[in-house]
Image: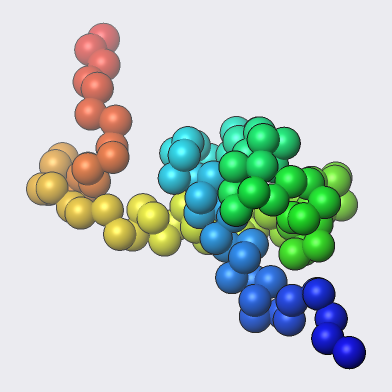
Length: 106
């Protein structure tokens, strides 16, 4: 008899895929990204999956499950930052394309 529960490798890819999808929609850090994940889940925007389908794949939104989402979010955000091209060297080191380039004067 086949199980509908995906194996761990598939679960991990699905969790990362979900977090990456949410981060691509709204490029924010944690905990704002958590809010986007909840919105995506409630509207079934990722593969048509709602809260129950995401839970079946190891993606939960309870207080006890958020550390897993937070860890995956940190990794996805770090990977995205590493992929962004460096545009030049400024006074404080390399400047990334997504850097906030506003200058404050005193």
